[in-house]
Length: 120
Image (cartoon, rainbow, N blue to C red):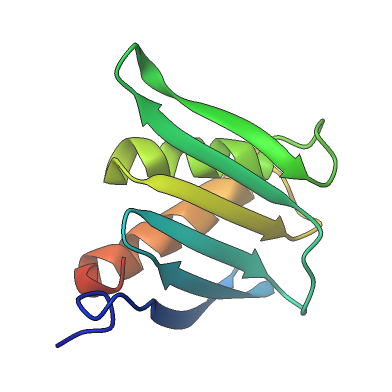
């Protein structure tokens, strides 16, 4: 019986060396959503949410905490919501918000999702 069946939370931690940066990931799978923390050091400087809408092909998203002009967390949440069809919370805590680096982040997450689908 996994934690979800018992009404719990499935927690999964992983890391990746992306270019010069060691990035840590903390995923908490909830019943109908996923909370994903991305960072290099313990911080909760941003929080974004995205979810699919029956009225739109693009997931609805919002920045809940942090700099609303920084699109990295919101766009990652939107892309993951589109892929998983779940409500996604993303806390993106990295200085590097370059789109190429964000793509490396997203690819590392997708790689982990393929390897451990039960954790997401």
